[in-house]
Length: 75
Image (cartoon, rainbow, N blue to C red; front, side, top):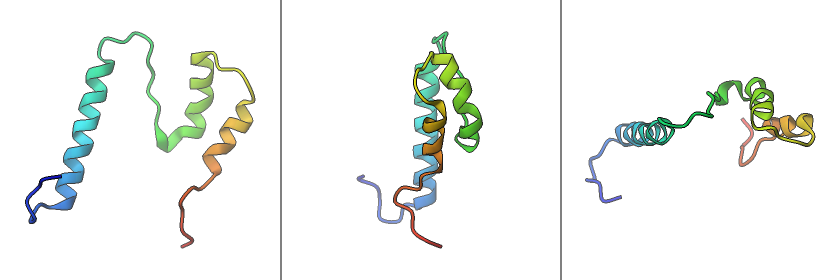
């Protein structure tokens, strides 16, 4: 990334997250159809999102995807 060797990885990661969040907020600032969606509460927020966008299909099957662990290692 062209950073100095002594860059603090946590500071770089925090700056990246701040930048991404600021860019998302800037993109959404003038949008009228938006909603908050918390990954920590994805299973609760998903049905609200589903209705908000007028999705069709099996909402329960879609919800079950939140239980699938991808690229996870056993602890």
